[in-house]
Structures are given as C-alpha cells and as structure tokens.
Amino acid sequence: MGPQAVNLLIVRPIPDPYGWRTLGLNAMIQDLKRTSEVVLVSNRLPVQQVKRGRMSHWETSPGGLVSALRPIIRDLSCTWVGWTGETGVEIAPFVQDGIQNWPVPLVNAEVRGFYEGFSNRIIWPLYHDAIRQPEYRQAWWKPYVDVNRRFAQAASEAVEPGGTVWVHDYHLQLVPSMLRAIRPDVRIGFFLHIPFPPQELFAQLPWRREILEGLLGADVVGFQTRIGAKNFAEVARRFANATGSDEIVQFDERSVQVGAFPISIDVEQFETLAASDDVVSQSIEFRARLGGARKIILGLDRLDYTKGIDTRLQAFRELLRSRRIARDDCVFVQIAIPSREHVAEYKELRVKVEGLVGEIEGEFGDIGRTPIHYLHRSVDQRELVALYLAADVMLVTPLRDGMNLVAKEYVASRLNNTGVLVLSEFTGAAKELKSALLVNPHDIGALVGRMERALRMPAAEQAIRMKSLRRTIKENDVYKWANTFFHTLAYART
Ligand code: GDG
Image 1 (cartoon, rainbow, N blue to C red):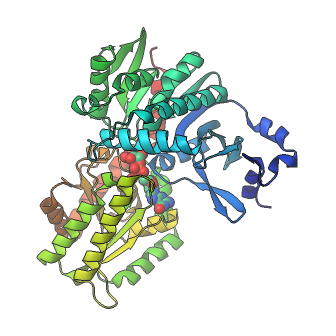
Image 2: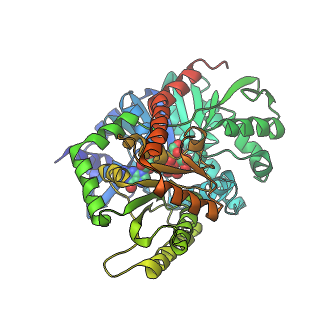
Image 3: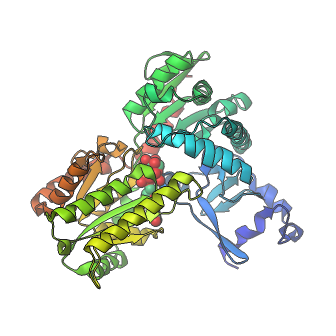
C-alpha cells in the first residue's frame, strides 16, 4: 500500500459504504486534529480526491490560489482549512505532502447556494466588472452565511492560542468577523485574489454592508492592486460607517490595515523545470508535431468568461482572414481547463468557444493541417512548461483578471529571453509587466494588430522586453508576496 492509499483510511463517508470505521482508526483521526500556529483558510483544500473505481488518491487542486500558496506552506508548519470538492462525506484531518489538511464538509444544497450561486453567480461576475449580469437571488445568501460560519468554526478549532489565520478569497468574506467573534486572541489576515470593484458597481450588492463588515473583521485586508485597495476603503467608509484613510480604516474601535499585495509565482521552480532535459525535449517534440517552422501562439486558461478566450479566437480568425499572416506561418494552441461546469454561463461559454474553434478549422484547415489545436483538459506541470517553451507568442487577454499567474509563468520559463507576451491591460499583472505588448482585449482590431506585431517581432526587441519582464518577476516572487503579507499582519496596529 503506497503512502497515498493511506489517506483512504481516514475518510469517513456518511453512511460508511466501505466500512472504514470498522478499521479502528478513530484514535489516528483524533491524533491528526492538532492545532497550528498558522492556519490558511480557502474554499478548496490544496488537494482533491481523484477516484478510480473503488480506489482513490489525492492530487493537487487546479487554480491560481493553490499554485501560489502551495510552495510557501510546504516550508511552514501549518494547517489548511478548506473543502475537498466532495459532497456528503465527512473527512477527518489528514497530512498530505507534509501539509495538514482540515476538511470542511459541504452538502449538495450548500454547493448550489454558497458556491455555484452566491460565490460564482453573484460575487464573481460583479467583482469582474459585471461582465456577466450578477443574479441577486435572495435564497443564496443564507447558505453563504452558514458555510462561512462553518469555515470560521473550523479555523477557530485549528489555530493555537495567539496564532495567525490567513483567509483567502471571495467565497469567505464573512469569515474574518465570524472568526474574530469566536477567537478575539488571533491575528486575522484576508487576501482577495480577484479584483475589488469600483463603488458604482459594488453599490449594487444587496448584502454590501454585511460583506464589508465581514471583511473588516480582519487586521489586514489585502488586494492584488492599489486600485482594488482604494475601492475597498472607499466603500467601507460609504456603506459600513468606517472612517480613516485609504491605508488604515477605523471600524468598530479597531484599525484595519488595507493594502496591495500583488501575488506572484515560484520563479525558481519554473526556471528549474524550463532547464530540465525532459521538459526541453518535450517542447522540441511539440514544435515538431505542430509543424516545424510555423510560429506557435499559445493560450492557456480556465474555461472562464473573464479570460477572453472567445474574443481571442475571433481575433485569430480576423488575422487569418486579413491574410496579414499566412495560415501556413502560424498555429494557435488553446488549452481550456474545465471549470465550474455546473454553472449555466460556463456551459454557454464552452459551446461558444468550441463553435469558434470549429469555424476556424472549417475555414482555414486543410487535410492533415489545422490552424488551431484546442484541448479541453488540464495538463501536468512539466507539459505546461514544455508548452511555454514551445510558444513564440503567449496570449493572455482576459477582460478582467485579479492578477494572472500564467503570464508570469510564461516569462519565468523563457530562460533564453525569446518569446513575446501579449497581455491584457485589465489584468493585475499588467501593472507590473509593463514591457509586455499591452492590449485592450475588448478591441478586436487592436488584438489582431498585437498578434501580428508579436509574430513579426525581431529577436533583438524580444530580448530587450523579455529581459525586463524577467527582472520584474524575479524581484517579486511568491515568497516575497507571502513574507510581505505575514510581516504586515505581524506588525499591524490593531
Ligand atoms: C485566481 C484569479 C489570480 C492552469 N491549468 C493548469 C495549471 N494551471 C495553473 C496555472 C496557474 C493557475 O493554474 C491559473 O492561475 P491564474 O492566475 O491564471 O487564474 P485563476 O485560476 O483565475 O486564479 C487570478 C490567481 O487567483 C492567484 O491569485 O492570479 O487573477 O482569478 O498557476 O499554471 N497547472 C497545471 N495544469 C493545468 O492544466 N499543472
């Protein structure tokens, strides 16, 4: 039995179809429920259970938050509180890859109300500039409150006296104040991974005061950009009777520090992967399979309407139609990672994207030669870096994005300073990666122009831009991000 299979033994399904409880492991379960000085709280745990028949094992969860935090907490002794992604099972705390995971159970109705409803059909679109109309359904509020309370309770059990709890993202905006009510002795940080909208949009939210009071329970509230932090301080003063400056907000006789903490990646890890023999040979193989001399354009995103995959495809079609670049001179690879597949807007997006891919193939393809390769699946990390190495042009064109780690990963992987990053102005990353080819992704004409310019960019200009981008990301990697946040939290005036 391998180390991963051991985890199966501490799963306690309700009811208990596999009879694990009869294995007499209750003592082990208790033993693993130990407290930590640092507790991370996010909707999803850093691992998810993958089932094959009656066997299952844990794999790293997809998504930006996990990619960013995993390398940090491996080096710390801490506990991660979160949902496993499974409903109707209660799983005892367990250790995987040196991280203590503390699962929070959810049932189906909560996933529909708290996760798919309130989090992903109200907060997600509203905070991304309302690029899809949020559906302000009253029935989703109660499950959001209930689930936030359960997370707060779990965090309060997992943290040592006087410890630190770092709460993440838009699913858990009520946790800071709920946790403070139970455990006034702990320091609480909150970090929002997605944008925080301007006053005019936030004002729409029927629960705006409650959400603000929830967040203001933290000692430090962090955002990806300065504008997000400023937006928050403004609405806190307007809708929650807070006072103070944009940096220190006074609320409920306490000070709350507000600031920008732009997230990043483990730059060294990507550099090491990009230099490893198997990854390099896989990238050479990808190039050969995609057609030797053809320039490769790459897009890699969760299949999400914020990422601008559809407008990017329309722009590629326009580029080919205009004949500014010959169809035999380039090939587009789009990896679309399955995401939130139960939410209606995501199903619609998939139909739209796959329709566009089909149209492009039909219009510009030939027997044995296609202008576009579309994969609706995830890839492993070595394959991911091999793709970054193979790509002459990386298209990162979201309509709105808190940061965007893919842009930073591409830059980190380009050890020889070649390649061109086309980057949307509406990403947090654009505030730092100023030497990229910046573009307004709503403007298809501009996108076409940037693609052409990227495909034709001379090697000397590529090198100047890429060197500058690489300097920028090396100055602010994920470790610096986490250290800065923890440092701010440790010294926050409360
Ligand atoms: C949210 C915010 C913010 C993706 N597919 C695969 C894979 N990934 C990894 C990438 C990257 C991450 O997932 C995606 O990060 P993003 O930043 O692009 O996007 P979101 O998931 O929307 O994340 C975002 C982020 O939080 C962090 O704060 O930047 O703005 O929306 O790391 O590499 N990794 C592997 N296979 C895949 O198929 N191995």
